[in-house]
Amino acid sequence: MAKKAKWFLGLASVAVLAACGNNTDTAKKEETKSADSNVAETLAKFPSKIEHEGTPIKGGVLKYALISDSPIPGVFSGLYQKEASDSEVTAFTEEGLFVANSDYKIVEGGLGTLAIDKDAKTITIKVKENVKWSDGEPFTIDDYIYAFEVIGHKDYTGERYNDTFKNIVGMDEYHEGKSETISGIKKNDDHSVTFQLKEVSPSLNHVGGFWSTPFPKHQLKDIAIKDQSASDAVRKNPAGLGAFKFKKIVTGESVELEANPYYWKGQPNLDGVIIEVVNSTNSPDEFKAGKYDIMSVSTLTAIYDSFKELNNATLAGKWRHAYQYIGFKFGKWDAEKETSVITNEKINDKALRQAMGYALNLEEIGQTFYNGLRVRANSMLAPTFGSLHDSTLPGFPHDPEKAKKILDEAGYKDKDGDGLRENPKGEKLTINLAMSAGGDNEPISQAYIKYWKEVGLDVQLVGGRLIEGNSFFDRLENDDPEVDLFVAGWSLSGDPNQSHTWGNTQLNMTRYVSEKNDELLAKMGSAEAFDSKKQKEIFDAWQKYANEEAFGLPLFNILSLTAVNTRVKNLDVKDYEGNWGYNLHKIQLTADAPAASK
Image (cartoon, rainbow, N blue to C red; front, side, top):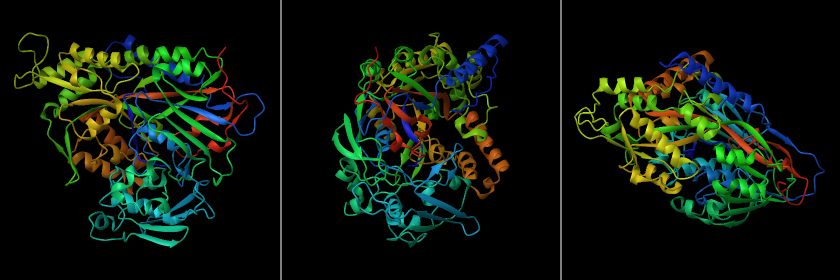
């Protein structure tokens, strides 16, 4: 299923980031460059395709560990889910219309095709015939159109409504309740629809550039849209188009799936999948004991070191299409006017934000806590977007002297001699950091605080402690005024356009808004960006602007590791990025139960 970016808790491209440019000495530059090179060399040691020896058994049940230190919310529909843990489940049960190549561009082979008419400003989408939902009901173009009718509705309670939908002719009137239909959506027949758009953009060529996931209209149409997110059709028995369907759900703890007999690619080799929530701290012991077949491996030193010695697993690797960042909380979301409003004057000073970036020693954190398997990010555009990523941008390399100079010149000075700076008005300055609980986030948060204190900034955890995962997101979404900055991350779609994550939308939890930012982001979706050279110029200009304004600080690009039990065959972890190109139905097992480590 192709979606817009998704959140993941505080926790990449094959191309290595350029050496960091800063004011430190040559030796330190070479040290940083070496660390980046070592990560690339390490990636080469981890295969992406898993072909373990052994004769496949018939059927079998795959044991999948969902690593989370919080209960999963249990919203099993891409219409409404907000967190990566829920989408990790629906990756097995939902499927979008399109598949993509390594550049995230749509190619043949999916449930649907997309054709763009730039002159007419239309796109026509056709879907395969004789496809069924997991409950046996026919799948038609009405199920796809229904997604637009729900997301665009004034009573919709999810977060998917954005500029992609507003770009459809007639959507504004429908969203405001002035029309019962969307005039720009024309159903051609049971398997084809044409959308009349206000503008066409290069994003439409990418998985994620246009909404691509159908939803079972037959299951949802009789439920009021305002009530759908809490309904059984979303939380207990949603029908899907993926390789597996729901069999049993233990709220917050586990999900049991069974093979979808109607799967359009053919009957899956497996009988089913059991997904269980596993605490990150316990994950190595659980895998060692042979309780699971697939488990995400944290690159935190204590956990990674435990996994790399196991003899019942192969560690598979890839660059994750995601990044971690620090976001500054500028204000709040005005739901009535559908705009962000800047209210937090404390952090509405780019000099302060830039200085906080230069104060952090991310190379040291990456080595100390992540075995060098997280690399300092230089841009708010992930390098997995290839040439659109500006590898020449310096980002915020560790430079405490530069940070101090910026603060001095901006008027942040220690006026009472306690070692901490007051604001330019001479008032006490305390900056409140929100960070989720789990993993090594406690010592990592203290490392951040220590670096900031070294340049004279008093940063404290909100409430004096880390925040439980679900509460963390609630506080950000509800614009808790206690929060000045936060650590989070984006799991990305295939659309490189940054309007949905960093534009004036509800998804942008920083609530940063400016005319210049809106202008630059709008160009990403303009017709001129169909020219690849012009598109590159547009993306470079926004990345430079984001680096200068520092409304968010890029932290890390991430190497993703997965432990795969020795009884698993026919799995490629590169298939499992963003819910497109899946081949879950091909996975096989060579034994009745996962092997334990000897």
